[in-house]
Length: 584
Image (cartoon, rainbow, N blue to C red):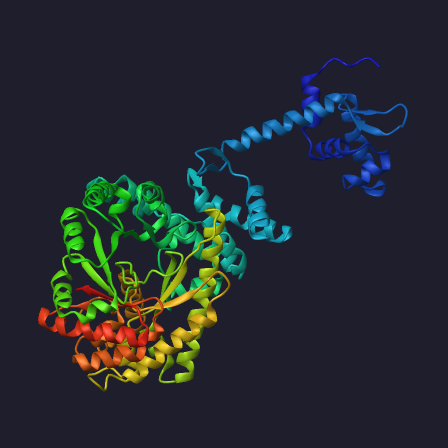
């Protein structure tokens, strides 16, 4: 059959009808007979026979539609297919003039497409397809009403999340939370880093902010995240959880220095170096090594401690060689030294000026936690004891139930951390976890209604015993939890700030041991105002429960230290405890 010459006016006239366009689009799907085609475009023989015949002839005359000689069915011609394609392109080009444009975080610009919202809702949040289409349509309407030149991916996500909240679909919105930092925070961190000439700090701060949100909103169970966010518990260093251990100690030798430098990124708080030196040459070498480590930016942000067996001459030499370095010295002394008064006098003279002393041969980190088997602390957490005391409203059963719940939440968090360490670093975490009570003194005052100037030691003992019991119960395979006597200042500040906002600064001020804007961080704070005898009796009652170590902060006159140190040695020996004395 000969192809008719193209009459543009006739073709455009044939296309200038919604019904004829409907016929073309219907035949583009499949060929049909006369009756089927009429019915498919919503026309009937009784009412529309003449109109349908008129429209069909128009399309046949311009060769947009033809009759298949074999099947006798009406079908779209090549010219008809081409016409529909041109109409589609024209529509896209015209719509683009008023189309929403999206600037994506991948640094691309593209037209808004509602179907992308549908796909995200289905794939990321598990929203059923029909509901996803409904939410996407509502989002499109809201975005069109904004009348902005450019949309952004975060803005679209905010709109979608607000719709999900309005529709009572919180379970889907939670899965679509976007982790990141506000522009203001990034700008502030950048300015601070410029002032300090600290590019490493900027990298760590920004990356950890994103990881912290990811851990809280996607990794940890909802109840655990809520416990941290509301201030019942504090999980230290969440921003480095997938890869970071709280503290780690190394045996000093040539090869280990490279390991310390290589792994410094993965240590959150403290790097300990256990030293066994035999001659002056090794001491000189150690001095050079410490100076080298002190120049490394990554180590400047964390504690570096030298852990050495007590020897007055050795300690003095190490102290001299590391005078300009930011390192602490922790000397561990065996109990037999206690029998020599001359040695005790030397101990008193040597404590202080960056030098701490641990008793009965137990090795400690300078941060106040003992070094157990495995040489690393995988993670640290704190429990907000003042909050638990206030919330219990004098009900002991409620207090102990809340304490158990805190340990259960912490244990779930530690299990997740252990699994992440093992997966990301391709090895066992190999360490243990420490939980401490934050604001022990304030909690005792709250429980006692601030009636007594001296803390109730029976209540303290019961709290510590319960904590140790819950730590053992909550521990799991590969996750060993021990009790420590100190918590981080970050935990103490954050928990106080949250509680002050909820309960009121005035109410909390009645129970505070100090005038600082944070809870007390150490159990030993309770013992400071006691006589030596009272302090030793109190310590003897609770020492056995602190498998993570007990830190005594020494202050005052050295004569008092000379009397106290032998007594502490004896207490540690009798109670099989772990104590470190640190100058305050």
